[in-house]
Length: 301
Image (cartoon, rainbow, N blue to C red; front, side, top):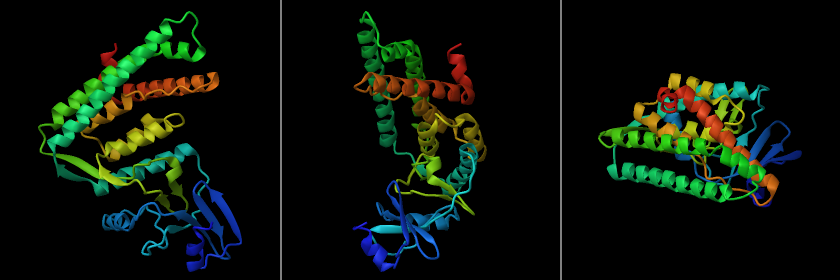
């Protein structure tokens, strides 16, 4: 609290009680509660832009205009609803954010080519990375549980990589001859934890917001919460209000299909847990893509 002390004194936020949530401090005053967080980025321009686009679902700091090192937010008492209900509401507002902030920008072929080469190199690297792991494991007389689980899913890994390569190839062939591509303002840290529903609904934690291809917000959401939510149903809600173009779908599907690089822990439990999470992602992405891409199932029939 030493670093936040100046802001507390400046605004006379003398609290009867202090509570802590991650990097935030919740101050209970005589007549209200406020949240004090370290300022990581000046968001005045961002919030003014969202105001100009008539997007109201933003929780702004009380001291937005000041050059303070900490931000002060009103505390919002969240409604008691399930995670599924919250995620559905979030999809409607996320699609609204993208609809209100979309614009087209001239294609810079060097940037497109750089993204394509980055993806193809990553796919190739992962192919040989998992091929080497498979060779090492299959030479063992006795496999550990994590090794056995991983080897059983090697075919799924190679299928995912092949699919990712086809989709990124399709994307590049489409966009390299386009004059412009669609961009939007992205929150870039879409999670249910960053969405509050009280009397009104708000996105919070805008420190990573930037203008980019609109596919990245749902991609980040999928990769963050694929284990607990029905992502296909949520994507259907989102794309009904904000449908992706064909080239956006190709890039989006390629990125979702791409298996992460597995990092095995040092002890048996951590190694198995890491492989289990990895296999869960493979299965969830397969389930999602088989429902969302009509060409996905045909490729493996």
